[in-house]
Image 1: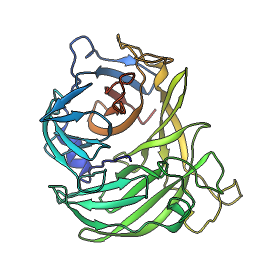
Image 2: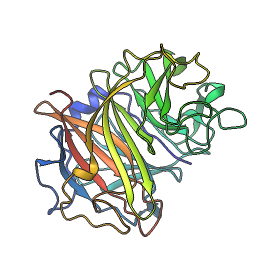
Image 3: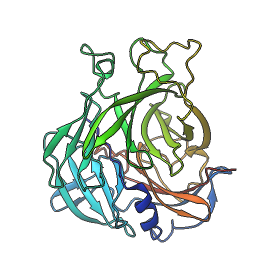
Length: 334
């Protein structure tokens, strides 16, 4: 099962996080271009195959930022780690009851997704389940719905204003075109409660899925697309997407390229394979040794008109994979 993390108070988090750096003196260089829009500021393998208070620090599949600038890293083994924003060193660990996802809302509770049911639940600060959000029948795992297990809600983010929650499915539903995944939204009805709202269709590259999505301050989305080919390695691409003119597909049974449905528009920011290696090594074949199973992403600040973004890879507790943090600087305007 996979865990996803989002932070509700995005604006506060952006203002608080300008101090973030990646650990590793040889890696913390500036302006290593991956593309005209993206540069790699550094990477860190410092947490790879480590433990904290007896808990394995790995299987990390989501990131969030607290209002004070510190970080939360979510393990898909139902553990939530607190991390120092500057050093990335663990500062706390909280087990989650029954589920494996978390997200920080404005009241300190966490919104949590599981891609196996799927579900979106609200957790208390100490890991207790408080509530469960409604899920459309079609997005449930077959035979109850049309989704595949481990292919539903992988990404989760709150849009600016904290009134709309968005979850991205990783793979297409049965009956939809293979290159189209669905993004489901919920509207806050007051307090901690959300109701089902619009749904949108996103065109994913052939052979890839969507492991993570993050809202930008202007209401667009950073979307990670990822895939793996045995003997070749990972493909990880970062897109800027705009759902604001897309068709609400919540009433569309099958998405097969029919006219009248406007998909979410997207623009490639970078393919991570084009980033400089900065001395990174890989434990298995990769087209660029910097690459691994990247799953988590969070916007951590702004600087000189660009977003500061932190990525993390899920090592699956596998000796051939690495828990690696990547620090990017991303321009979302020409």
